[in-house]
Length: 312
Image 1 (tube, helix red, strand yellow):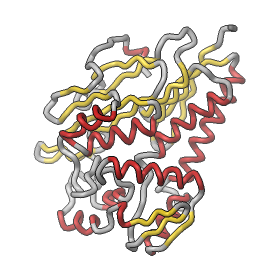
Image 2 (cartoon, helix red, strand yellow):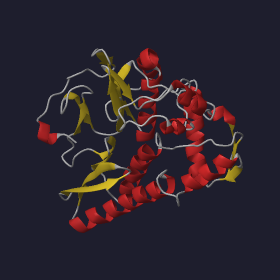
Image 3 (cartoon, rainbow, N blue to C red):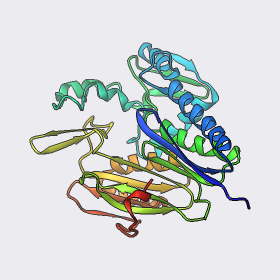
């Protein structure tokens, strides 16, 4: 086999620093595969961004505000089917209608909301308030919202990896803001090294994973949080109470697909002390750190040590 060259492309999407690393026969082939993948990431961002008035998601939420129905395309239907599965398997903890709680929680403010404010929004939260009869989505309560934020970035990672594979790339990795999918190992068949961040140590790593294939995603209370009177209020909110979870500091999951790893990591956070047993029962390799500093999971902590510069 002719030797392939290594290429690294950085870009920004979905509010995160992103990168594609791959091996191709020349720069033209590398750029071609990268453009296909990045264009699709941007397409999904434009389609499902809650920050864009012209996005499909914004259109859906305008319908939701009126308590009406909308017919959706096949791709959106697939995401809604997956959201329904996550809701069922998490006993209602993974709920794409809970994004409306961000109206109460401003993690840049340094203050926590009044309980009455949260309670008022909880009346608009609940997948069970939706009627999903593919391809028709009906909002039975006016004023609700949906948010694919816990699914779309991970879905975009899996699609980007698949598109690169279809374009002939056999060795590479997609990284969208820490959500990672391996296209295939390095050209020399060595694994990609993925550093798992420690949730309480700045620039610290919990462990390093060696991945030849599959995906990894993490959820934690360190990205957006409020520290008040020694208490940390993270951005992972329980849709049943409207308040941040307060047991897990971070959960990382390895799976075949990034969308599965990402939703499972979030559910692991939401299930608190039951998160690890739930992941174990599903056979998903994972590790966790709780707010007291204890750690565990089915992946050994600090099992692999490598020079920092080799990390993804």
